[in-house]
Structures are given as structure tokens and as C-alpha cells.
Image (cartoon, rainbow, N blue to C red):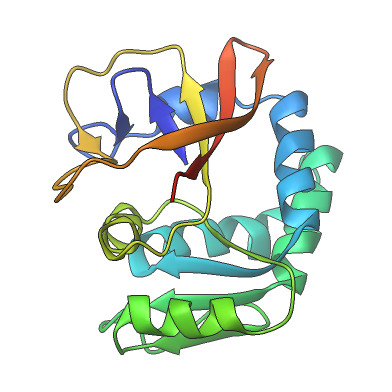
Amino acid sequence: MNLSLDGFMSGPRDELDWHVESWSEEMAEKLLELLNDTDTLIFGRVTYEAMSKYWTFRPLEQDFPSQDQAIADQMNRHEKIVFTRKLTQTLGKNTRVVNGEATEEIARLRRRQGKNILILGSGKLVSSCISSGIVDEYCLWIHPVLLGKGNPLFNNLKESIRLKLTDACILNPGIALMHYQPLA
């Protein structure tokens, strides 16, 4: 999850310019590492609609960066599940829409054999997963920007959650990539 230093996933009008402007080859490499350990991607409708256009159509353009081609290839290969009540059609391959309770479906997915399940963006969905206690790891990309207001990730927590730092690194241009696991 990309976050500003003050804990926002996006600005008050869903702005992500601060994230897009700081994208680097090093970030692409780290995302590829995450995707290599993953076989299922989970999205809410808004994030899915924005991201699916990128990995479905943008690779066809001549100026598409080669580092991003590998990411697009992975995204297209992985199973994608979109939790929504509004979406009826999807772009690309390996995508299905689930209209039911997200946390129940995700809990079911966690019990099956396979690699990791990764949620990219989708703040409301992530908040629901946090509240239900089904998050195994928080992978936070902390950007060196203060937004002051916007859409917070850790909104409406019912109780505190103690975490253990399991990995950390600093990426150019000054982004802290932090991995945390909830303590039992």
C-alpha cells in the first residue's frame, strides 16, 4: 500500500500524483518481487478499473517502459478478484467479479494451497480486511510527502493492532518500504 508520511493513500480528491511522480526502477523491481511470490490479486472496483487499463492497454504503446512490461505480464498472468456490486464486465484475462462478502471470500482463498494473496490499493476493501483480522502482512510504501488530508488507510480501527517489523529498505527517491506482521 502506498502511503504518504502522514498515512494517506490518496489526496482528498483521490489524487495519486505524489505516488506516480516518484515511481522508479527500484520500486518496479520490488513490486516484481512481491508479484513473484503472489498468485492472486484482489481489488475493489475503483482500483481495478484504474489499474486494469494500465496493464491491459498501455503495454501496447511504443513508449511503454520495459521494466513495467514485466509487471504488466505478471498482472495479466495472476488470478484477479474484484469485489464490487457495480461492475459487470472486466478487462483482460483471469479476472472474476465477486458480489458477496469480501472478507468471507478472502478467508476462503487463504485456506487454499498456493502463493500469497496481494491487495493493491482498494482502501475500503483493505479497511474491511484489517477490521476482520485477516491481514497477514502489511507491505507499506511510505512516500516522503505530507498531504495534510486525504483518504487514510488506518481509518475506523476498532482496536489497536500491534505489529512486528519483518523487513525494511529505503528506495530511491526516499521511499521507505516496510513489511509488518500482526503480533498474535
